[in-house]
Length: 275
Ligand code: AMP
Ligand code: MN
Ligand code: MN
Ligand code: MN
Image (cartoon, rainbow, N blue to C red; front, top):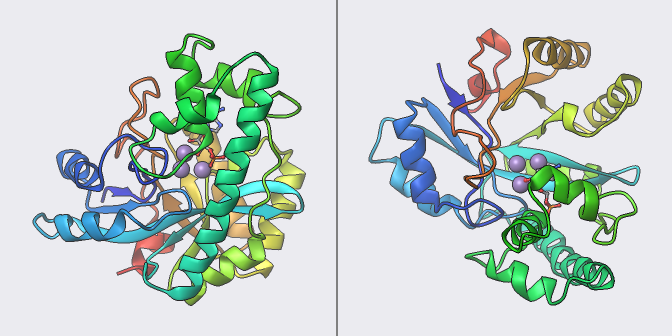
């Protein structure tokens, strides 16, 4: 069974429309697809409606930015009701911070000699959503940086000019919104937080106590040892397994929708709890 439970459309930092995401999933022969835009459920109605023309199980999703002990993490909500009031209000709070942060990023980049970054990054987005990816793609287009990892390293993280601390909702709040909206809360890409194993285990343990339901075991580029490690952390906390490519559609990202390594999750697959 092919499951793709982590993708982005242009209702966050992806390139394609929700319809095009569904088409990609059909072409990739996925059995299940979730659209999981950052702090946005705006693309779900379109994707859900269009998926009915195909033999594709569509799952309403969202990737929520959260703050946990001053660290930014991403919690994917799967099977959420996109009309649930608490969730919508919560996501609105995160998006208010996004706009504020984008202006601060722009001020930082101005000090590094880059003019009108906010305006230029906004033009990279087809919707009202603005993310660090749009700043990064703009800097690549302007030939200020060669690729995504170089931009993030030089401009957008740590103490670099376009780095702003993530004042997102707390992980506890985020898990509550997802649960109230009927969804399962899944820790996204656990190995991408640049934490030591001890710290990662502590994070997962603390999130489990807040009600975390599962972890992404497989992402694009996961090696078999990565999968085994995340599975072990999941098992220690009795968490479900999820999988998704984190597809965004930017031509320079080399990630294919449905392209995460296929893996048989058996009974612990989150998909068994979503149908
Ligand atoms: P934001 O939600 O606005 O903070 O943007 C975060 C997004 O930027 C992530 O979801 C990724 O799509 C992208 N991103 C973050 N770090 C990197 C990186 N080192 N290389 C490529 N993309 C990244
Ligand atoms: Mn993203
Ligand atoms: Mn993420
Ligand atoms: Mn993502």
